[in-house]
Image (cartoon, rainbow, N blue to C red; front, top):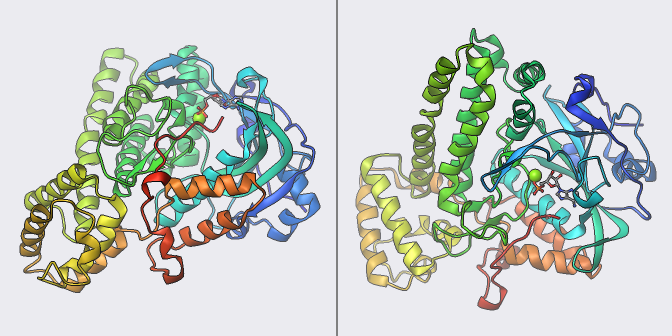
Length: 490
Ligand code: AMP
Ligand code: MG
């Protein structure tokens, strides 16, 4: 048995990748397998869980049809261009057309050195593997476009970081791993021939609409702009901070990719930063929208030779497309955030959102709990009622939030109350992967106990449902549990 591979990246010119086999590990152990995703990939989960399947997932045996390779890419990291990055800690095994007819990459992350490995490492610690598994699957359950996790493994080998810690491998599935940085690789080398091959491949694979257009490269840029405008608003709906929005971590598919120092906010503040390496706050929560445009501008620059033979015309046409981004992103954000308070976008509903966010920021109110407890406050005019208390308790300044509730209820005066509450509940999850829970899961896993991982993962599969047995997972961290910084997966 094997994966039903049908590879296309490996058919591209040699300049697109380096062939490299995963490096076997000593004692691989399957910690988590995503059965549903395996079935979508037309692969038997029982085989994947067998010794033979685990050997494939660990990189100890090459599956039939696999053509392991490291993809090339460059990228702007914290604003500076790095001409050579590439898969340094990941190896693409191959592609599978899933049950919905969508081509998906299957990639091992942490499976040993490649020609692009920083310091020849190529390994991953177990903590970041479990973290990416949990967060990516939570994002999928929330409805956010994302790469998926097929399996998490322990390697039975230590990796050297500050000291030795247990190693892990994540088996990641993506609509494709083509990044803005993939285009930058060829653009930086002025390799227009391969740039065109890449753009044509991308259009065929990711953008059938662009393929039918009479200006396919313009349509490609438009599609990428549209998907990022929406994706970043979608993150912000849940208080998600990606943490390292370098251009090599922006997927052309519009999926969230590369969960490193990411975090869901507890106490709300627009300038919040978690990443331990983001000293300037470049990737702070509220900057994500404009960073999206900065990255898309780098993408557009790579496409100039394909947009028009006159560079001047190409720049004018790319600029026009990029100029559509702020409006697209803002309207996506308004639609999503006004829905969180049960309303549709308008001047007055957006003003209410802004006012609420200001009060939340001043009081450091928990982002998820605020919106999760808001619907109940529509039923009652009495802010001292039991069902409004969980909401009121999140704020220091009771007067201010009471006045806000009055204005909010006024805007709901002519709307159907239960419809509004439904809208809120569809946009406001009960459960998010809270940083302190992820930390606890990782610490327990290092101590050999995977029960907390499994329990948290189970809860996050149904984020919009109340799960009375699991209410402790709703709670914000206690002061001593607050996680203030998150780290890259290296
Ligand atoms: P990232 O910060 O994870 O997006 O990675 C940036 C670059 O560093 C990419 O080229 C990665 O492949 C490479 N890299 C990250 N972690 C490792 C590692 N543990 N070993 C080798 N290369 C790595
Ligand atoms: Mg990356």
